[in-house]
Length: 100
Image (cartoon, rainbow, N blue to C red; front, side, top):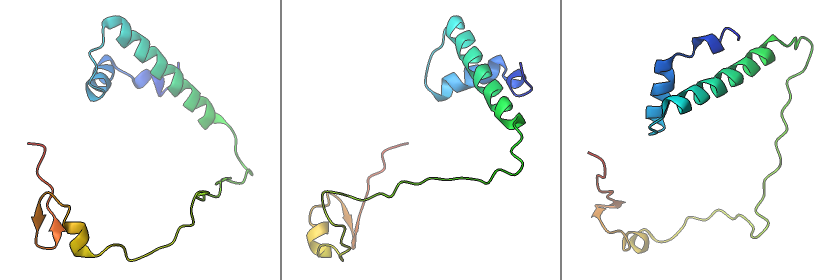
């Protein structure tokens, strides 16, 4: 096991479970820890590779909407848009508070 993988504690696994809103059994915690250790081992292996002289690469596919031409416009009349707002405050939508 590599240096990064050795840093995974049982508390870390529990915390990840809490963040994911999961109640993990002991068996599931062990499986999750094993999976994370394997991922970190792989990352360590990649970090050990000598990349001297290798140019950074990126390949971004051109993106276009094939169904319509993208045309920028100023949009609808403000009053027409705000007419559909359930709550309104001056010239804006008012979003009701939904959490705490």
